Image (cartoon, rainbow over all chains, first blue to last red):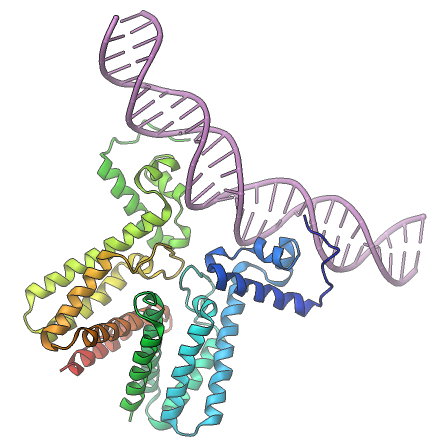
Length: 198
Length: 198
DNA sequence: GCGGTCAGATTAACACCGTTAGCTAACCAA
DNA sequence: TTGGTTAGCTAACGGTGTTAATCTGACCGC
């Protein structure tokens, strides 16, 4: 039973962001498998169908959070680009952001790559937000290794795979190997990767 | 309604492996999200509770498939160890097995790492089967880089992260970048990694 | 033949899930 | 007072993992 009396009136935008925040909060606490439309509705003190006024489906809600994650990365990358001029420094700092993001907002990282029970069926490939992230990294690589488009794409693929692989494995083995130790190996590897580009 | 007349009598072992095979078949066709106890029971022509005679829960069933995957890798690694004596060749061939396994049995690879809707809550860390896989790789690395235990563990971590990262990303981007092309980059990278150990 | 036992398998239920159809109650213009 | 619009709800459908209770039928001693 919903008690309407203690439900504060909120704007459309506030309710919408409330849904997103609640979904992430539940995912962070209990994992994505525990996130349900009913629990979200409960938390924002509405009935389940209201959620569908804001998102056509659970899939679309997850996709929103996913894109939000890529957009966040994009702005962080831009910040680095403005802060440093040295391409080598740039790519290394971008690598550090990747680690920081994955460890500080694991629930977002999970839904971005469909990890640990998070599952969004919408294709990630066509996402313009993900493409934008790639553009910044490719541009950075190009700025000190001006090669053909295919070569840049290959280097980007290698950078991404290395970064993502280390992060994923570090999170997977975090109860065997302390995160701080994995982070050290990560930084070492990414520094070596960046240096190897020269 | 279940028609008992056309259900063939099977041994305990045969029914058990039937459950595992059916789960993998559904996962391969429609993804792990589509795998349900009822669908498995339907396929093996039994009622749902029968599945619980063989596996305490869906989680345990997934864990079995996961461990089976690690055991398969283990035997394949052993095969390579017997086939080649050169440590460099050994580690490279093991890397190739990793790729082949992930692309030929994606549904098993997914459940091993909780990817794409596959979700097993049982901790993977304590799995002896996973440990066995690691032992073979660590041993291989040690055989031509005899270093301290921590250094070997670090190299193993790097090898695993690199291999897994490339494979994951290749599968993720397979509709943008053909798998054959990604495989080439993978082989190149793993060869470089192995060479870099000298 | 008859009653009892036991294992194998089933049905039916519980509490969830995503999603949707349809209702209610409040408001506002005419 | 109507009529219409709108926000929000309840209730339902078909699905999920899981379990308690029940049924079925074969076997065995008498």
